Image (tube, rainbow, N blue to C red; front, side):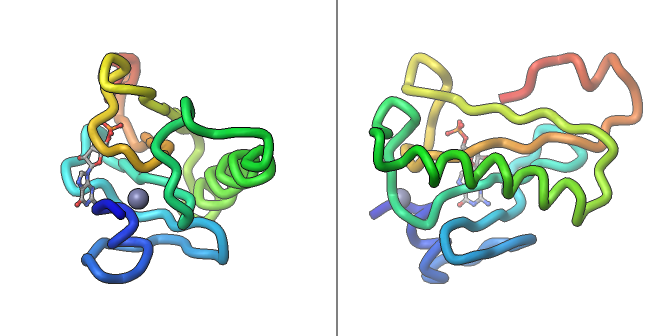
Length: 114
Ligand code: 5GP
Ligand code: ZN
């Protein structure tokens, strides 16, 4: 169990923007873009380094959720970022996709966040 499991189980607060049986999307508590969402599986998986064949559909589902939320939030463009492992900048070891959007100019957008 971890903080993102707690959020998925509604044991910790979060600003949730989308939920289905397999996944949850909520606002990053410390955004590094005007719109900064985190897409997680409800099931705990440490990182992309820890997925196996049986997780293929679930990981694909998370990308479909990214698209769905982008449509829901009327985003005209966005970046998806996945940090993998401590040396990849991962701090929370519950698999998550960063969805970043909402910049006013290309300079801010093209600084790589997270
Ligand atoms: P990572 O570096 O592991 O890829 O990203 C973890 C992200 O989770 C960070 O951007 C951080 O701001 C965010 N985060 C950490 N703890 C919490 C929390 O309790 N609630 C929310 N909403 N975001 C969190
Ligand atoms: Zn977890």
